Amino acid sequence: MKCPFCGHADDRVLDTRVQKDGSIRRRRECLDCKARFSTVENIMLAFPFIIKKDGRREPYSKEKILKGLQAACQKRPVSLSQIEAVVERISSWVINRADNEISSRLIGKKVMAELKLLDDVAYIRFASVYRTFKDVQEFVETLEDDELLDFVDVTNPQLSLTAMNIVENEKKLEHENDSKTTSPRTRSSTPLSN
Ligand SMILES: [Zn+2]
Image 1 (cartoon, helix red, strand yellow):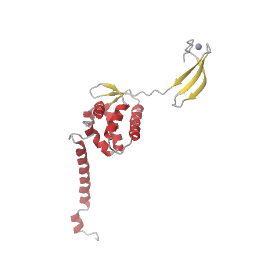
Image 2 (spheres, rainbow, N blue to C red):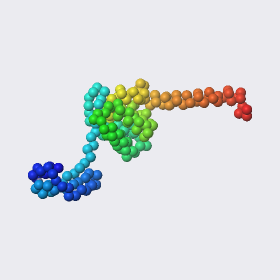
Image 3 (cartoon, helix red, strand yellow):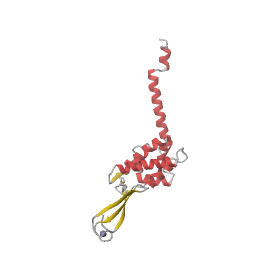
Image 4 (tube, helix red, strand yellow):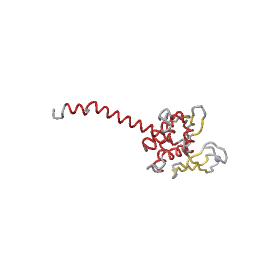
C-alpha cells in the first residue's frame, strides 16, 4: 500500500481485524516515514451486465428482480423474507457464474425455476401478471418478454388458464395410462379373484 504521507511503496502490517460487516481492517506503518494509516479490504461484488436480445446492455438490478417476484407473489402465502432469500440466491448464482455478461434469457430461466420452487401459483401467474403491473412490466422488459415465452407457454394471453389446461391434460394422460392397464371393462371381464 502506497504511503499517503510520503508515497513510499512498502509498509508493515501492525494489526489485522475482521470488522462486523466482514471487511478486514489493517493498521499499517510506512517503512520509510513511519507514519501510520489504516486500510479496509472489501470483497468486490461485481455483477455482470445483462445482455438483452437486441444486444443492449444494462446493469444487473436486484431491485428489479425483487419487484418482479413481489408482484408475482401478491396475495400468496409467501413472505418478504422468502422473496428476499430468492433474490439473494439468484444474485449469488449470477455472481458465481463469474462472467462479465449474462443473457437476460438465462436470468429469466433462473427466476422461473426459483418461482416454481417458491409457489406454483406465483410461477403460473408470473407471465400473465406482468401485463397488468408496471413493476413487473419493467422487470420483464429487463428479461425480454419474448424470450420468456420460450420456456413459459403464454401463446394464450390467459396464461393461468393455459397452464391449468396443461396440468389437466397431464392428469388426463395419467388416467388414460391407468385405464390401459386396468380399465373398467378389463376389470369386469376378468374379476380380481382370477
Ligand atoms: Zn511514508
